[in-house]
Image (cartoon, rainbow, N blue to C red; front, top):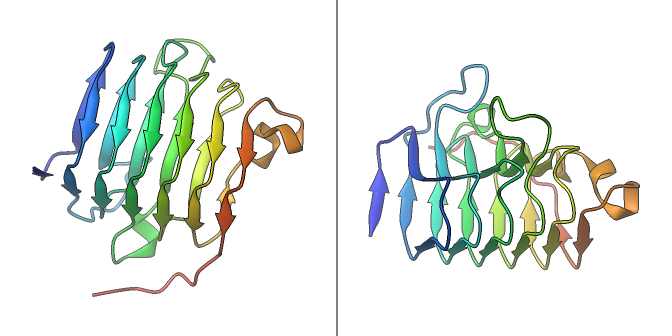
Length: 175
């Protein structure tokens, strides 16, 4: 199916065992306004979700996972591509605390075999997001694969990055 024209195109909040699969999610390429104005998939305090084999394009933030109750999610085999204006493409995948819920972020997720391109940073991980595994992803951002490398085990954090391929690309404007 195809989903388009919403500020949050797919929203799973306080959910368990959700599957988001084989969708074409198309944003409008809107400019961010003190943060993302368009999100492809939002998992808020959600556990046991599968986000798989989707094509997400032209949103400020591709997949947004929030809250300490978000755990055991699998995000895999998605193609997440920013829109034509590089200034509008914030993050491919973001891990953060939920609003008004303290500093705990998602934990124990597996994020793998995704292809993320045309974002400032491919992946952002807050300090409160712990013990997630990011593996075998293809990352082609403008600035870097991980916005917070200190959140990874190689930087002293608890999140694992293994076998990801990162190639920085130029921030060109596309039609």
